[in-house]
Amino acid sequence: MTGIPAGPDVMLLSTAAVLLMLCAQRMHGSALPAVSSYDFTAYRMQQYNLAQQKHGCRGAIVVAEARSADEPSLTRRCVIMKIQDFTVETYFEALRQNAAAVLILLPQNISSVSHETVKSFMVSENEALQKETLIPVYVVPEDEQLLYMYDEVKQAAASRTSSILVRVLRSMVTATAFQLLVSNNNAIKAITDNTIVALEGALLGTGEDAPTIVITAHYDSYGLAPWLSYGADSNGSGVVILLELARLFQKLYSSSSTRPHYNLLFSLTGGGKYNFLGTKRWIEENLDHAESSLLHDNVAFVLCLDTLAKGDELYVHVSRPPKPDTPLHSFVQQLEEVVFSRFPWVTVGLVHKKINLVESTVAWEHERYSLRRILGFTLSHVEDPKSELRGTILDTMSQVDFRKLKRNGIIIAEALARYMYNLSDKGSPKDIQVFKGQLDFQDSRMSSLMSFLTSVPRAAQLLHKEPGQILLVNSLEQEFKHYLQQVQRHTFRQDKRDPEITFFDQMNQPIVMYRVKPAAFDLFLGGCITAYLGIVYYSIQNFGHLYTKLKAAVKTKHQ
Image (cartoon, rainbow, N blue to C red; front, side, top):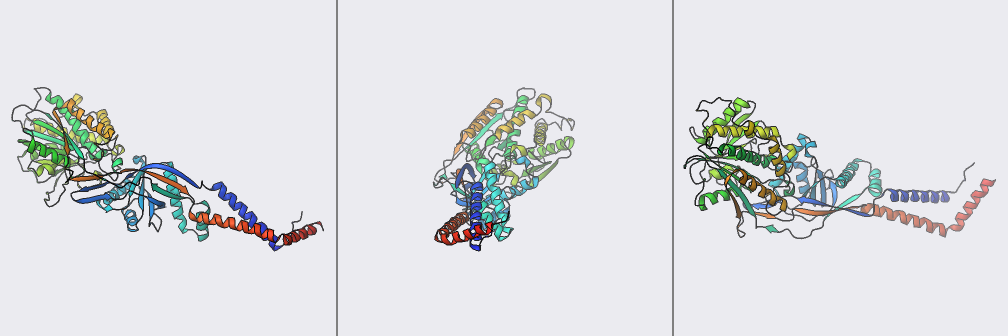
């Protein structure tokens, strides 16, 4: 069968019509709905004022198109990043280009992320928290829709290296644009009616003038976003060891034959991540306002527990080196003896950092005691007080090494027992174990305590306002009442006229993601429709001419 010859006009019109029909069919079959939306909750970066310094992001409203961090132009765009994209360079580049917002996608399973990526993110997170920015910064757990958006904007950024024809066709026909909108347009308000709760309880030794050893830890957490700060290592680990010490020593104190000539005063304080304000107020309450307190006089030393769930290093942080024949010097000797005899692979280091009275903040909890001339020190596997490990949203239970947490607890308990019972001077073997059998640290209890502590975020902004966080603090109080005597709960309210710390609201925001075709798509579709109507109009106006051409083609076929 021979083809039908046609004139150039007929061929041109036929080809154009077919192309337009195929293009329209392609667009109809592959395009997303004109506008589809997805609602999710995102968690805003820290915002607070402390010691007359502003921290975190000051903005909350977002109305912007989503873009990958790989794009060359980020101005007035919402930059979408996974944690591997969130580096110091990319974050500050977004700020430099005046991006509309930054949205960080947090993986559901932190343990699946490589150590290098976790380390890099923590460093960037720490840097970001040191600066103030007007750009809204949000963190949101990953889900299918958000990952789809991320992949789309990532592919759009990658297509920038393709030929201009490929980029135009992709942008006009297949690409999807994403608009992000924070639906809450209320102004951010300061929260000055903050409260901090401190718990205390004691185990009383023999004798009326028994010296006191204070064991303390702060229980709040810190990270880029308060609603995602679970603080497993920092400082859930310190709380877990303190509660286990309370349980084990309570058994020794319950019998007159094993009760030592020392009082143990336990305290859990809030506000530790904000200049240890809870510790400061608790010390003031005991020294300046209480008629009688174990903290008034004859304090041997204060042992602060901070970040103890990792590493094979144990650092003793002090404000001044301990002098020989002092209680602190003797305890450190006992600590080293326990490590050397039972855990020789662990290193013990003494870190001396003077308190700078010019600075308005302190680095470690023991410095609050040192400022009141009470001898204290902090035990931690962290050497640098500014370490990113002490404040990150990646500090979850999956990052805890329970073997090392238990080992550090045993080292502390054995050193305390050796010091309080003076076992070395009594000729006891260097590898003596006081805490074994019924007095051993319980794996299941430590795991349950850590699981409970990390079941809700423990940021100071949330602890006494949200139901789950209030329940957590109440449960800690019940733990104290179960094992300790003279349990007290101190609630400290700050002066609204001159607050030491100011938090801000709108820390969790509803965001709507709109999936739409880009503006170029509308222009392209309008062009196609215009071309189609032009062809129809041309066909009507030149019907006689087209008919003659078609008739001639049919005659040629029959000849």
